[in-house]
Length: 235
Image (tube, rainbow, N blue to C red; front, side):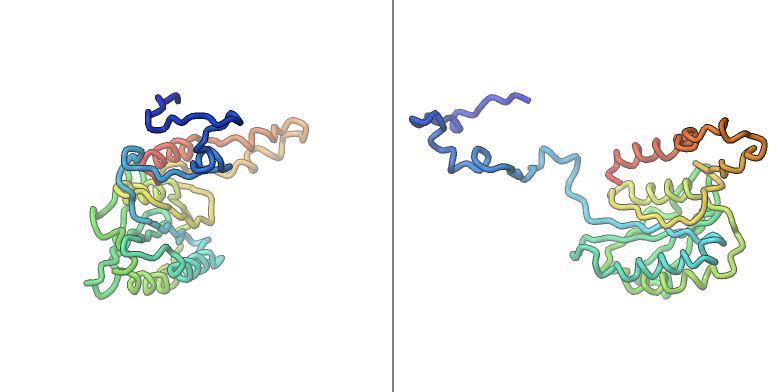
């Protein structure tokens, strides 16, 4: 983009054909220069660091230990999150439904809110799903410790992965941030559900006719559309 050079930026050339002030201006003599973007370059005010964890608690995840491993990893990483009063966290779990948790300090224990509608997803609360780490760290650590045992007898094998992502996104929409998803099985219900492709009619197809390249193409475009929508809100 061509800008008009401001008058105060003009400078005479020295006998060597270089600007006399070249060595005093980092942008004229350094290999790379970083400019701090001022307000007019921002889509919106700088947002807090927000982390939302989404953990699979379907039967497979519980039995393989994936849920326990994810909870333990999240718990250990809390101390590595950027420090500061503005760092915020939230958490949800999912199988064939989505379970949000309100981590308000005033409550004796985190409150579970279940979203059964996986076709038209919503968030059960406008507030209290994402809170500053400083306010909810104890409740969050207590919850992470109890999730594996809360679901230990879970017999739900289905995974509403797409709907859970969408619900996490809706919770983060006002702030943007990082959505971290721990998933152990193929999404089988709700938005973006898939079925295993390799088993479809394999036995009666000769090896030459199997079109391997088709297995590299996504069956549906849900994740692509989601990614574009999420990016628009800095998620």
